Length: 345
Image (cartoon, rainbow, N blue to C red; front, side, top):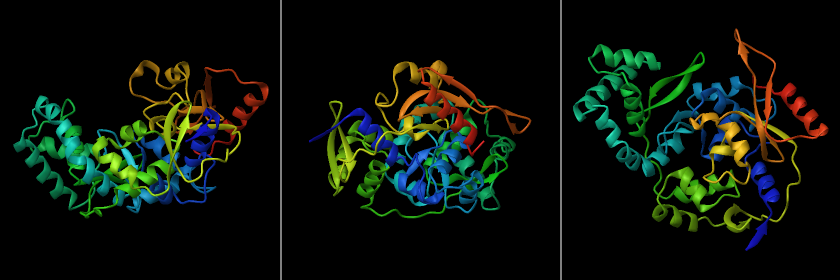
C-alpha cells in the first residue's frame, strides 16, 4: 500500500475538491460531487461558484436552481445539501427510511401524530400543485388549517415531507428559496457504486469512516459498494488507510491561499478533520461549538483561521480576517490579495 504524506494528501484533496476552479458548469460541479453541504444558502451558492469555470457568478448558480437543475434538500440526514434531482432520488432511496426512523422520537415529542402529518401533507401538496411556496407561506397554510407550527413543528414537517421525497427547495425568491413538489422518479437499482466512486473522486483521499460519515450508510451497505468501484486504490496517509481513484503517486505541488465560504465541504465532508485543521483552528471555525461553521482561510490546505465580508445596507464592507496561525510576510500579502480579489460578496 502506497504511503502519502499529509501534505501530499492535502494537495491531492484540494485538487479533487476543485479549489483551483475547473472548466465545469455549476450543475456539473454538483453532479460530480453528488452533493455539497447546503445548511447556509449563501455559502453553498458560493462554494459551487468557486469550484466552477472562471467567471461563474452567484447569479449563474442561482439560475441552475431556478431551472430545476439543482435542488436543496435533506438527502442523507437532517442536514441540508445542494444536489441534483437525480442524486436526490438515489440518495433518498438508500437513506430515507433510516432517517425517518431516527426522527420518530422527535416527531412524538412535537406531538406530530400520523393524523397531523397526513393532513399537513395533503394541504401542502395541494397548494404546491398551484405554485411554489416560501417558508412563511407554508407555515401560514398549516396554521390557518389549525396545524400548530410553533416550536419547530412546521420546520420538522417540511423536513419530513422532503425526506419522503415529496418536496424540495428549488427556485429562488430574492435571497431565499421556494418549496416545490418533487417529481417522482425511480433511481437505478445498481447505481450506488458509481455514487460512492463520485464521492471519493471529488474528495480523495478519504477513509471508510469519512464515507460512512458523509453517506450515513451502514457498513453492510457501504462496503459492497466500495468493493464494486473498479479503479479504487487504497493508500496510507499518516498511518490511516484511505481511498483514492486512480494513480495517487503524483504530488500536485504546494498550494497558496484559498478562501472558502462557511460550511464548506473541505471541513464538513469528513469525519476526521485533523488532516487539515488543528484544534485551535477548528475552534476558530466553530466558535461556541453551536453548529455554525465560519468561512476558512487555507494555506496549502491547512486552516489558518477565518474571514468574513460584513454586509451593511446591502453592500459588502471591508473584509475581516481572524487568524489563529502566523503567516510570514509573503503569506500575509497573499491573503490580502485573495480577500481583495474575492469575486462573490
